[in-house]
Length: 69
Image 1 (cartoon, rainbow, N blue to C red):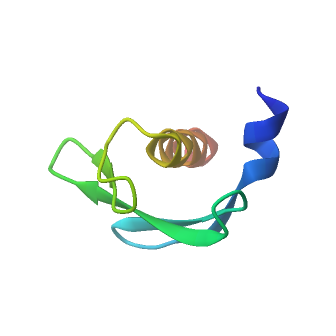
Image 2 (spheres, helix red, strand yellow; image 1 turned 120 degrees about the vertical axis):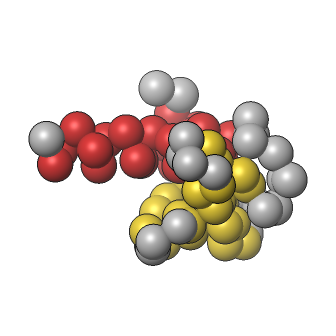
């Protein structure tokens, strides 16, 4: 994993339909929402589902899911 990405993002909280991430480079909390029945993600800051924040949130959810199985 890219060391810069590891140090750039951290989890603030995971809620029912959103993940809050602190972006150290941008110095702000970013909200990523889970949308749709297939569980797609949308970053409200970048207005994208293919940004760094959405990718990080996807990894968090995948890890959380594998730990509960």
